[in-house]
Image (spheres, rainbow, N blue to C red):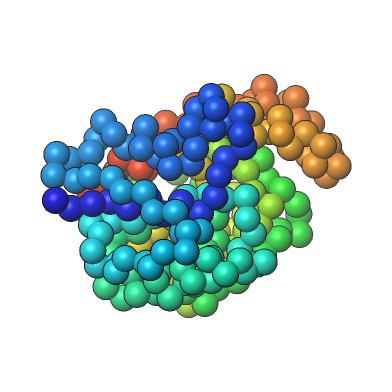
Length: 238
């Protein structure tokens, strides 16, 4: 039986975990209904000191978000880089999300670091590039769509041989493709409205410090069906 592995790279805030589930559970909830019968879901916590399974042993890979920072190079995160390089070389389908997005870019010789404009949080508009409009995973999305975002770091330098699929006013690299079936997104397709609102509430002080209105951001949070739909569409490439 083939398995889709969710690589867990961190934990959500305790109140989010208590009310909605941890990062890996949020993905499972969104994927469960569309999961083909032969495919199962496995969770691998990359922070555990256990031998990494071979990438080719999985039918597909999803890499979660994290409150860690890619540029701070935690040892478990650095250990994932050659694993991701091998998975790309073996054409294992991959989808990195937020931290997973930044880590994939760093693993493939890009640079991820703190964004000079500060944190991006809330439901924001993301726009497809021309390449994104023709991409097999993204082409069914409207040219401009809402997505949930919460990040202080971004992909700051593009890896070689990488295609930019989406961007917005804050971030030039909101979605990337590295190979035929290897993508990453800065936004959170697994988030729901209550989860996004909980994250903004947690970040009130930091957002105020950079001149934003947290209450206005909370009020502006809305459903992101187009972004969320990427998760189920990704299953078609496994």
